[in-house]
Amino acid sequence: MRIDVLPVFGKQLDAQLQDTTVIVVDVLRATSSIICALNGGAIKVVPTVDAGDAVALASRLGARECVLGGERGGVKINGFDLGNSPEDYLGRIVRGKTVIVSTTNGTGALHSVKSADMVLLGSMINREAAAKKAAAEGNSILIVCSGTDGQPSADDLITAGAIIDAVRRYSDVREGELTDMALICENLYHNWREGSFDLNSVFHVKRLIGLGFQKDVDFCFTPDSTDTVPAYRDAVIVKA
Ligand code: MLT
Image 1 (cartoon, rainbow, N blue to C red):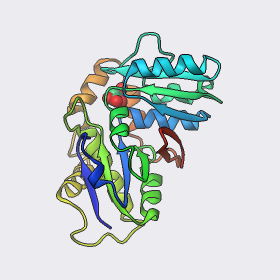
Image 2: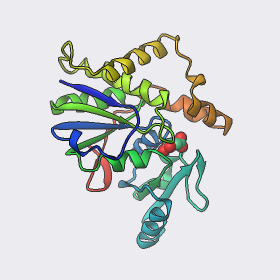
Image 3: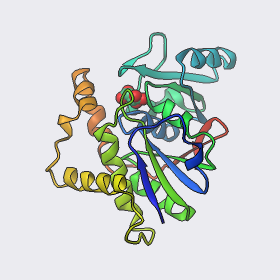
């Protein structure tokens, strides 16, 4: 089983998506929040790249049907119901609703792989379940990281490595089937797990902590707190 990691999503992905299970990772915090929205009882999540599109969709559906969530630069978008703190999506506010989200990078990463047959959402909180589901598909795996403002972000790379580490428990990954980027991520994950890579040195982590979101970082980096694996198809996200 070939496993590759795209350290930051790009626009020209279509050629790489055939016979491939894609796992989109935005551990801080979009994929973690979307997992929580489904765990909180949302019917579905609709990701939009543009905040204006999110607002337009919400006004078509009406406030009784939907909840608007999202951030720019980590901060809740003005007029939206929720920002991007995962635990806020576990509350009653999302139950029975369509959640419409727009985030700085994560929803763009999802949009970039929308032509793939199978797109799953991965995070540290569901990494074992996401790995198991992806391995069961039997195709090549491409982990697409959202990064931060067009740059790779070590928090996503650690999470990609955690998923790869878990895939080995469900599939026979042979010598040479991991690309160099996949090997780098797996090693980074091992370094983080063993305490020799300091998460607090990561740009996006420092920014979130500076904005008062230490609790979100701790929540998002607690492995395997849920078995929920979202799937993105036909422009909506539901439990796989
Ligand atoms: C993003 O989409 O860029 C992130 O989820 C940002 C954040 O942590 O809110």
